[in-house]
Image: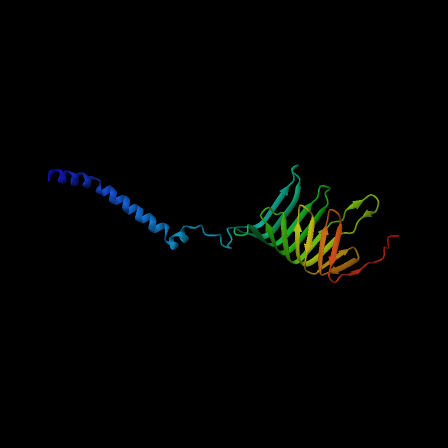
Length: 204
């Protein structure tokens, strides 16, 4: 009888520890097998909401020599974390190549990548490649692009539009349903219904 009581006393010393271990195990099993708690524990994806904005801003990109490669300004810029893109109101873009030739673009709205290397332009789009000088031919006529949509790669100096566009150089004028332009090669591809008016050269 004394031996039984002694065994019970020893067991009672460890009983609270055993009960706590059993309760912890049961709690873990309940949490790990509850779908609602699992969903709450998962990281929520970012919502399409503005996380920061800028007013009357200017963003510049420099080359390794410290010269300005491109500049983007606007009235209002809003960043969306889910797409990592920046929406810009009343945008103006200036791009400069190593030879100092400039190309400017304005639009009512724009959607830019976070590094400002790729930009979509919307509504009242105007792109101007400014006049440059050549020793042989003298001043070249300024080249202009007008339309409602344009996608620009600033580093590659490429412009693409799948919407109607109007091009003009001096008195010459072209229109098309779509366009691709490479400023490095000065090659323009016009697609769809293409119309053009070439004025005679009166400089001679």
